[in-house]
Image 1 (cartoon, rainbow, N blue to C red):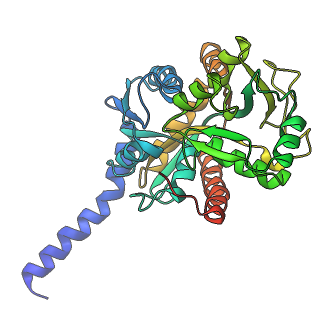
Image 2 (tube, rainbow, N blue to C red; image 1 turned 135 degrees about the vertical axis):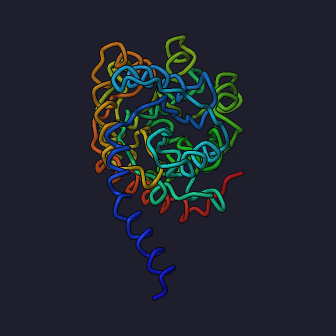
Length: 326
């Protein structure tokens, strides 16, 4: 070995020796500046309304501001990719959720892997889907809807926010479970889909609680069933699909927080601790309740397992139905 090579080897060896110490020091000092959290959805929407107060609480706990960065796109892909490719130093976090696990299968060439490209920090909350109909659509109960669908295969239309959306997939599960055939009418977003249900253009839709509640309270929509395991205090007379003998339709939409792959474990644990502490705040819990979410206190490992299992669940259904995004 030449003198030059020996010196080069010594420099590289020294760098490798101090690198772990540098990482540990960085983790110990974190956070030393504001933290960005990417919300891959529009400002003012349900994801944004959930994350902004949570980010404020977490920032107070961590003693650094948490700045929300909205990056909306179909399937939440653009914002989530920005989070996946960010520097893994703890200063960029991403709001992730069930929609990511669905998008992984229905979109071609998703530029990241929701399971492999993130260190999943923890869950925020989960909420049920409501099967609703226009109040004057002639369906007094879930049984009446199924009876009509069986008598007239394809004659009952249902709206969704698009192919592969949670509402679409719940209705596909419903048809499989009941042996019925309904006609899917996809829209480019939940707002126009719900608007046409309210207008009487399409009679049926599956949507989250926060989207359905105003129409239900106004008497324009009727809830036939909900996808949670327990009845909802807002609509205590409405049965769950479990009670209706369809436990396979237990589907809760959920959201959480993730960091880029390679983020030091010590930082991930600090973020998780701040997240869990924030989720005990009474004012924040009221905000989550308004959005139809129940808080989920989870470890990084538990959230990682949730993301993986939901990716498998929805991937199998999407592939079996050969669903592709519009």
